[in-house]
Each structure stands twice: as structure tokens, then as C-alpha cells.
Amino acid sequence: AQTVTQSQPEMSVQEAETVTLSCTYDTSESDYYLFWYKQPPSRQMILVIRQEAYKQQNATENRFSVNFQKAAKSFSLKISDSQLGDAAMYFCAYRGSNTGNQFYFGTGTSLTVIP
Amino acid sequence: ETGVTQSPTHLIKTRGQQVTLRCSSQSGHNTVSWYQQALGQGPQFIFQYYREEENGRGNFPPRFSGLQFPNYSSELNVNALELDDSALYLCASSYPTQGIGGGGYTFGSGTRLTVV
Image (cartoon, rainbow over the protein chains, first blue to last red):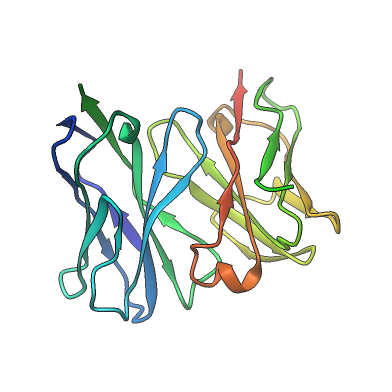
């Protein structure tokens, strides 16, 4: 079974600084996708960034980038130049090509941005 | 219309009762999934519907059931409510081709169900 583990229940960062959120996963599939979702108090899950497992290049979206280590099954999110609006719960998620009709989510990391 | 709308936003029910939660998807989004998010946890997959047929189910008992309608709306029904059913229920919809890679899913803001 696929599992996603986020070992940091809470993180904090000073405004304008950089923070890294950790995620590891376990799967026997060779083709899959990894995601970071943001859930602000509005509760809607918002896609932050996506990584296809077959791509060696790490995905980047503006201030957000990932460090994808396929052999280690690690997928961390780096937020640069943190802003107050980045404060939210962040969930790492997995979606496999063979089990493609569902996301597997981690337990989340609550990010606080300190002014 | 864009986005995914869920109703109601909050709901309180008594143990043993039945509840229906509703989701209105974007036009053209004929794939819809439902997730249960318990407090302090990540969302857990309940089931997915494609073109009005269930095409995947997570580890949830049969008292969790769903319907999808041609107008891109869907329902989650839960019978014989238990205290542990208290959670945020999220629906997410997509075009099926976008959903393969997962990035095309749009989530709603959820229904907060409290069972007392």
C-alpha cells in the first residue's frame, strides 16, 4: 500500500526567509506523481506544485520548488521569500498510475509565518 | 461557472441519523472524488465517480454511498452516523484526462460534519 509521511507537524519561518517541509513516501509503483497542496483556513485544498516521477528535473513554481529524491523516496518543498499568505497547512500527496483514481495524503505540516 | 461548491458548509447530526452532502462541480468535470478529513489528519479517499458510475473506493463501509448526476453535481450519503464520522468532507472534480496526473483536480471548501 502507498503511504505518505510528513514528520514535521509544525514549522515556522520568518517573513522573507526560506523554509523546507519534508515528505517521504513508500510505493512499489514505478510511475507516479507527487504533489504539495496548501490548505488555508478556508479549507480548500490548493495545488502548490506537482512532480512527475519520470522527470529527473525538480519542479519549480515561482517561490516554490521541490527536492525530489526518487531512490530515497523523498519529496521536500522549499518555500523561498516566505510571505504572510503562505501560512497554512501543507499536505504532501501521492498519486500512482496504477492506483490513479485517488490521492494518498500525508498528515500535514502547519506552517506559521512570523512577521 | 468555475470552481467546486459544497453544501452545506457546516452540519450537526445525531448518532444514528442519515446525512446527504452535496457538491457542484465545474461544467465538464465528469470525474468527482470524495474525501474524509478527520481533525489533524490528511484527507482519506472515500470513492470516485466517473460518468455517474463508481470507479474506485477506499476503505469505507457500505453505509457511505454516492451519486453523480448529469449536471455535474454529486452527493455523498452516510447512513447510521457514528461519532467517528465527524470530519471535514471534501469533494474534488476534474476532466478525466487531467485527472490522470492529478493536477487537474479542483477541490471544494468542504462540509464540516459534527456527529453528536
